[in-house]
Image 1 (cartoon, rainbow, N blue to C red):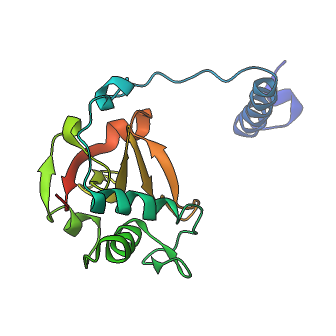
Image 2 (cartoon, rainbow, N blue to C red):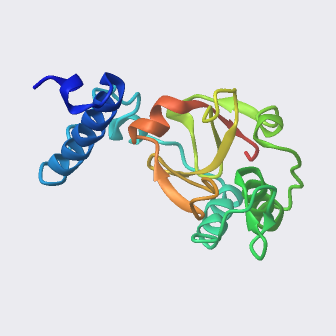
Image 3 (cartoon, one colour):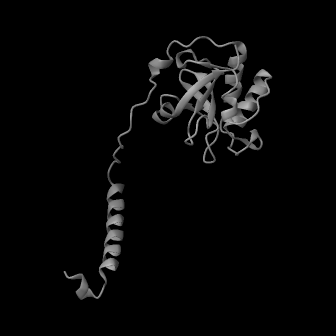
Length: 181
């Protein structure tokens, strides 16, 4: 079929053809299982967290207290359960209430507190830091043990527990720091 015989310029025809092709591809995808894109494997496995050292009573209190805040809403700059939390607000609130420690600042400034611990020495109550925004230490959570941590993810989520073995968190993990001995 000659496009010019239809009285339609070539560009207009291509635009309509591309739109139809996109609709067909979208509809075709509805009936099939999505293909997983190739991604690099996670850095951590369940075995990474098998022989964790025991936590202090204060550190276990931090972990337990953080679990009481599950499902609390997210609020950028939020520092309490009524307003909601951002990641550093959750950490500061839990440490103040459960351990009597006053922490201030964002995730990057919290990354300077305490001392760094190797992954295989992490204990409940330690802080875990991630590069989630393309800059170091842009996210923080509280380690619970067995490769799990609690955090306030973002405006589309609530305080929740995640696993470090999940590819996303494993690949964005930067370090752990302890504030309690």
